[in-house]
Image (cartoon, rainbow over all chains, first blue to last red; front, side):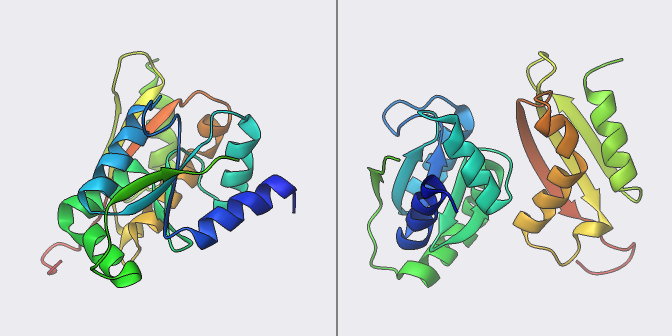
Length: 117
Length: 84
């Protein structure tokens, strides 16, 4: 496995909620990354955001790992939750909150931090 | 030929039973699409698994860049008279 792929895998498996987006939470370059972050924020998710834009290999390695072709990609405790459409849908139905409660407990706080590759 | 027709054809082949199958060109630019699809193939699958089936059907246009952005809405299709 390439070093980059190992780093990505490390983030996915150790961060409570990891989100791979285009841009940074402060400067998003894609409407779908924005939709995903909004849904996660409204469910009080402790988000670790990773920008895939600095190097095209990030996206390639990420998709090779997850088998998911598009960005954003959202993981809770290592499990792929889906892209923007799915997190929005899960947020609207209350299921996102429920899955976060189950994975991380109800005492969590919604936060956004970034991790760089 | 419109930009949506080849995608509709791929989806029709992958989901011959689809009761609802629509591809909308969201921006008119021919590369941002909304797919709406109801099929029995989605029954019992998680949303991730459902979307994966759509990505599989559209693997070629996704890989060659003719789809720049794809939004997906899938629904399991229930037998007539069955309770969802």
